[in-house]
Image (cartoon, rainbow, N blue to C red; front, side, top):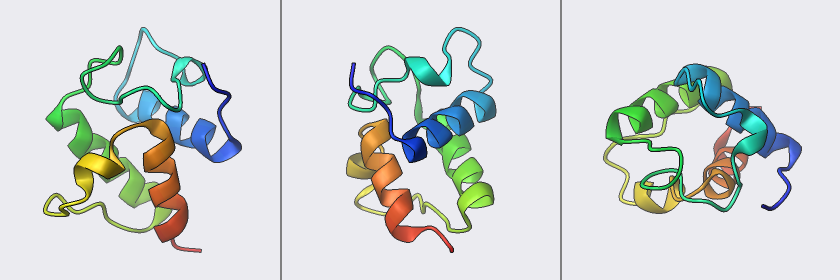
Amino acid sequence: MAEQSTAQHELATLIVDSLNLETVTADQIDPDAPLFGGDLGLDSIDALEIALAVSKRYGFQLRSDNPENRKIFTSLRTLSEHIERHRAV
């Protein structure tokens, strides 16, 4: 497993907390593993929850009609990179 950056760990913690994941800790989320269809077992409802949590924490919205969503939500790494590019400062 690749090591998480500080931003990735912060996001992984947000995901674990917002989804109330009981069997996974933030440290266990591989930055390059698929968020959906992989070991986490996340689904489209979870994507909405993550988008809401990101909006509250980072000050911008992940829109459901964005054609890049599949790419953005590929992994912890891709989501974190997207957030870093778009977050409110």
